[in-house]
Image 1 (cartoon, rainbow, N blue to C red):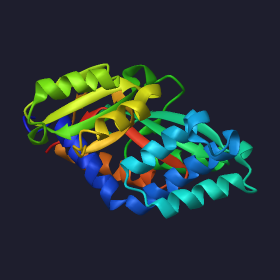
Image 2 (cartoon, rainbow, N blue to C red):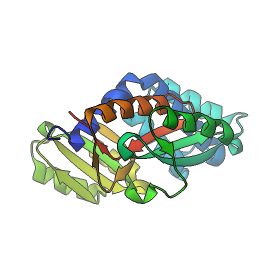
Image 3 (cartoon, one colour):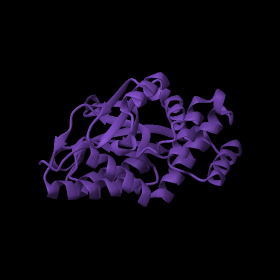
Amino acid sequence: MAGHSKWSNIKHRKGAQDKKRGKIFSKIAKEIAVAVKISGDDPTANPRLRLALTKARAANMPRDNIARAVKKGSGDMDASAFSENIYEGYGPGGVAMMVECLTDNVNRTVGDIRPAFTKFGGNLGSEGSVAWMFKKLGQIVYDRKKITDFDSFFEQALEAGADDVEDSEEMVEVRCDWTHFSAVKEKLDELDIEPELAEISQIPENYSEITEDQESTLQKLVDRLEDLDDVQSVFHNALLNG
């Protein structure tokens, strides 16, 4: 299992997001529109919108797309119809999984998610079945080669509001309280170092190693879930092979 590492997880997640950029833009646009409809279009007075805009910028979402989402939220959209739900379950090899959704039809969402788990050797669990294995945090990850002066970066990350900075041969990972993610990300952007990944994550407390066959099936399950319109993000605690 020597090829397994958290860096492999980061690279795969980044690659998957790049390939599904259009899909990701539509999901972020939904978040922006709902945030605007609920609390207005001023990011300084709307933390939820500020977070959605930070996510949009991290994904390099075009300004026109953002503007259209804000306009939609300012119009006749019924934001009260949408609810945020997190579904928990187990994937191949007993991997713990968290599926974050934003939906206007819970029955439809569950009706899509449950068979996806079943098809790929997993099962949808009850509320709280795996949530205890994860912690919701802001996560910003950099390729270690881009950090030329770690000590200086470490100090600036803490000054920006980071709670922890993890250094390894392959990556530097900055973690913070998820409610501070926008402020930390904006401050670190001033260093002009492009992160590999920047998002609000459900970060596992412990990781699980799986076989290559289980990993292949897990990837199919994650792809299936992420293709669903109601699913915003999928997280798991498997260590992937680089």
